[in-house]
Every structure is written in C-alpha cells, then in structure tokens.
Image (tube, rainbow over all chains, first blue to last red):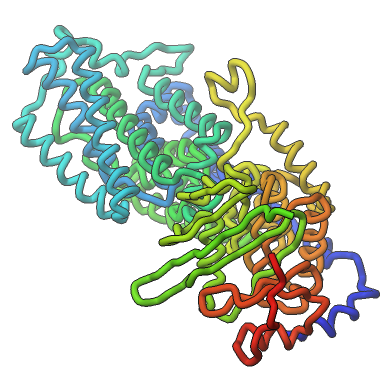
Length: 352
Length: 258
C-alpha cells in the first residue's frame, strides 16, 4: 500500500517526453487508423476493385450504365432491409424477423386493399403501422424484459411468418389485379431512365433511406446514443442515456423500414405473394457484415452496408454474366463474410 | 460552515447483509474528502446512495441544505452531482467530444437544429477542447479521436474533465488511480487538485493511502457500514488510518465535529 510513496520522489527528475511511437508508424498502422475512423472504407475499396475486375473480364457487357443500374435494382430490397438490420446490429442486437415483417406487411397492404376494400393508401398505412408494432414488441421484449435479441426475433420471425400464411390463406394477389385496381401498391416498381441507366423508385427509396439514416446516425444525439448503447450499454446508461428508449425506438424504426420494404417488394415482384422474401433476413445480415458493421455493436456505418449490399449484387451479376454456376457466388460471399469479420477484429485492436 | 452535501442515518440492507448502518456523512465546501474503508465496509453503498445509483432504505441526504432524493444517477447529475465511475462510463468507439457530451448534446439553433435535430459539433468540440485545456490535458491533440485510442491516464483525464465540466456542486471519484501507473496517477492527482482549486468539492474513494494522504483535506474512515471517524491527514499516519479502518486501533476519542 505504501509502495508508491517511496517511489514518487524518484519521479522528480523524470523525463517529460511521453513514450513515443513515431518509429512504429508504418503504412499498415496508418491504414489501421484510417479504417478505424472510416469503417465504410473497406467495403468501398472491395466494391471498387470488384467492379473493376468484372469490368475488365466482361468489358462493355458489365461496364454499361444499364448493367450497373440493374445491380442497384436487384439489391434495393435487401438494401432497405439491410438498413433496418444495420440499426439493430449497431445496438449489438440482431433482428431475424426483418424478412417476415416485410412479407407480412406487404400481405396486409394487399389484402386490406382487396379483401377489405380499404383505399390503398389506408392499407399501406396499416401495413407500415403493423411493421412498427412488431418492431415495438421486439424492442419492448429486448429492452424491458431483457431477453436476448436473437431469441426474441427468432420468435417474432416465426410468429409473423405464420400469421402471414394464416391470414393470406397462402393466396397470391396477381400483378394485373393490382395494376388495374391499386397501382399505388406498385409505385416503387415504376422506373425512369437517364441515358442508359434505369432507376426504379425502389432504388431511389433505398438510397434515400440509407442517406437519411447515415445523417441521423452521424449528426443527431439519437444517432450517437445508438452507437453508445451498442458499444457499452451500461456505460451509456451511467453517462445519462436512456438506453431502454433508444433500444425500443431502434427496433420500432427497424420494423417500420421493413414494412416499407414490403411496399417496395410489391413494386419489385408486381404481385403480393406470401412466399416471397424468405431469404431477406440472412441476406440483410450478409450485407451488414460485408459492409463492415460489427456484430458486437457500436462500430460501422450504414453507408458500409450500402457498399456491402452492392458487393453482393456485383458478384452475383458478374458471375452470372461470366456463365459461372450460381454456387460460386455463394462460395465467394462466404469467403467475403469471414474476411470482413477478420478485418473488423483487426481494426478493433487499434491503439494510440 | 454548512456542509455542501450531508447525510444522516442512512440505512441500506440487502437481505441479511447490512451495507449501511445509521451512516452519517459530511462534505464541506471546497474540500477533498477521502473515503477509506476495508473491502465490504460499505463504501460503495454509501457512494452509490449519494450518487443516486441506489436508494437507501431510510435516512436523509441534503444537498446545499435541501433534502434530496435521487431516483437515478441521471437525477443526481441534473442536481449537479457528477460521478466518475471506476469503469469510467465511456463509449470506447466514440470520440472524446461525443463522450464528453453523451446524454447532454448541444443542438444547432434554427432550422438545422430544431427540425433536423443536427448536433452543433463545432460548439461541442470547442467546449470539449476548452475543458481539457483548463485541466492541462492538451497532450490530447485530436478531440475527435476515439476514446479507445487513448492511454489509461488520458481516459481518466477525459472522464474527470467531463465531470468537472458539468459537475457544478460535487464531484465523486471512484478509485481514479486504481488502474494507472505511477506517472499517470500523478497526472490524475494533479488534475484532482486543479478541480479543487476551482472551488468544486470532491469525494475521493481510494485504496491508495499515499494518494489519499497527499490530496485529502479530511479522511472519512468507513467501518462496518458506518462512519467510524473523520481524521485530519496531518494529525495521523497512514498506518494509523489503516489501523482504524481494520479495527486494529480504537478511533480517536472526539471525532472532528463535522
């Protein structure tokens, strides 16, 4: 207990220079620091490289504005769901119910219009409200009852999916019917072209949601609180953040965005089908992980998720155009997932 | 002189364990009061009761003469009682400025702030830099660097600066030097004295007797859930203090009137 009292006079003539690491600033450690402060950089680099490689291999077939915007259209749904997933994963949670919320909401939008005869606008509002409500249930169970997010959303996934089949009677609403009676449901399938580039409103919505979330997460107090809760929930609470409110609002927003993805989904496939979008939860987690968002929470950016979704899109279209077996896509995505998590762990080891 | 913060007859029981047993406490204006005691003596319970982390079963706490009842650390903070926890309560991946303003961010004025809820980063960074340099912590160059890239002493410094920046009435420091090396401890002790020099009273919980005897104006010795005595570090030695807190020696007959 008294050890440092004798030691302290020894500090009298101490060197004032702090241990310096100047000689250790290698290119690699500089890179590590850059990646630490800009987590979206890794997926951006991978995206650019993969576009260049496929462009070199395929030439104009791939490097056309048509093909590149086709990728955007193909990833729009996964990207929107991925935006919702990003929010939840930033709080160190996981949302397995995203795909089920999306499908159930799209079914509610369709069935409320056609079976109950509600005006399409009201049906869409009901779908969005339902998604938000399921998100609220997820958030309440995670934040108040303190159940693990994995278990909670595993449960609501099954519940929402079963409710979807029970309510719809496994019945698809055909595209022509929607087109003639409630075209607003297909709004996000409509497209416009600029030069050779074709944009659907779904793509615009996807990019819009990502940009809005990027702003909110970076520049508002709520966004900073989302990171703080994911980083260390107890510390955030002691520092004065209402962690419960943040968690519940994150899951509610996730539910709302998924329900919105359900609306975009109707535009994408034209019809309302209770069997669609079954892989959305795994694909959204893939986009988030490849996008450099840490599954342990608190690190990463939603822009990274955008790049992650695009990387998956570039790989699948590029390999298909090369005539490769579709399984090569999955194999390479698998490699990318593991590489992304390894890079995340390495970046975390950054020190001053 | 009126104490800034005082408590009378605090009791706290956990099942059969009595953590606080009719405990009294007094903190005078502008002083550094060290709280020492053996493990399990109830120091943490006392501090948690004062900082709102737990609610005593009975007894009263007064801040500036007003009876108070904190339901949470956040309420205590709003009343001007800031606590620097041993864990520091910082988000490692966020920047120094973000951490200093966590839970009390500054928003821009006008449309950007009111409608778009945008944070006023330049203001937050300016104030954070100002608070750090007030406490001589300008070795930290980049206010936007993540807290996890700082050394232990720098992190402690940021946590103390945060408390000093917002703790208008009382600052509670829980084992601020426990995880630090000799040199970094020195920095933090200097920091504590700087804060006192600005007139803010400090409660210092520490196991490190040399540190306690160096900076404390008075020492509250805690034993078996209550205040055993309050001693002046100039009148007693470290081994006396250790003897009091372990029960090896009877406390000085007339405790210093609080």
